[in-house]
Image (cartoon, rainbow, N blue to C red; front, side, top):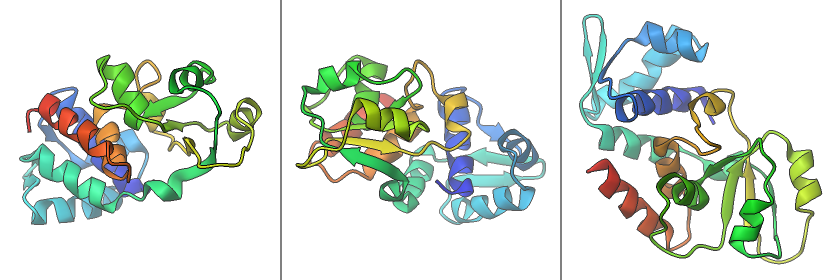
Length: 195
């Protein structure tokens, strides 16, 4: 994931989960350990589409939905896939077999976060930096892959709770999936966000 995407996630996390609408470029740069120019460049397209408005001492989020849609449209989830395989077990059995350091996203993330599933699903997406452990638990098998391991950025573990990615990350990851039921999960998330 690109550093500007860290900025988008941090803004959405702060506004959606912490309910803070006013932020500063400097505080974001310091929190994410990135340059101020990276933050400012990330904000430019958001200002252009009306998702944020810049004030004298920072900026204010004016449209969370637009911000999330913009981030989702530039996200390249496929590029973050570091390992994929076929796991011959039920979805719940695969989820139970995960190592403790993973972060669930997409369908499983939604299921564990909200204790609900808007549709049946047959793929699992997780973030893990320990590809070796994932390959040990889930060796390569022929057939259509149903387990996808994504490379986490250094900021994601700090925003995740109970091994589940934050809601804004779930949204953009689901937005980037091709399975027909991804749309059912997205609509359910949007209802929860009241968009």
